Length: 121
View 1 (cartoon, rainbow, N blue to C red):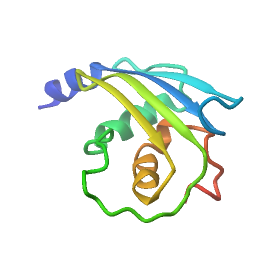
View 2: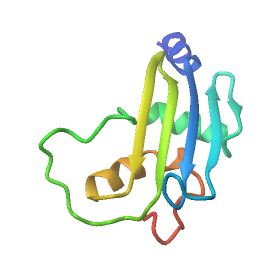
View 3: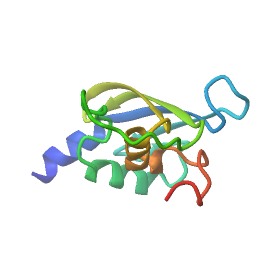
C-alpha cells in the first residue's frame, strides 16, 4: 500500500497560475509543484504535497444542478494544469459564488497570496 501511495504521489506535477485581481489584471503569480521528490517554486511544497494527497478529489468540478449561494468572494482566479496522481488536469478556480469559493478553499494551499487572511475564512 505504501509503495502504491508513493507511485501516485510521484506522478504529481502541477503548473499553477493565480490572478489575485482577476485574469488579465496585473499581479499574476506562477508556481510549480512536484511531489516525490518534492520540488517546484510553490511555497511550503512538502506541506502542499501532503495536503494534496489527503484531499479527496481536489480538482472536482461543482456538480451539475448544484444550488450555489450567490455570495461573491472576489475577483481572484486560478488555473491548475499538469498531472495529478498520473492523470492530466486542467482546472480553473474562481470565487464567483458559494460553490466556487468552496472549491477554492479546498485547495487554497496551492494558491498562495491570492486572498487576504480575512477573506479566506
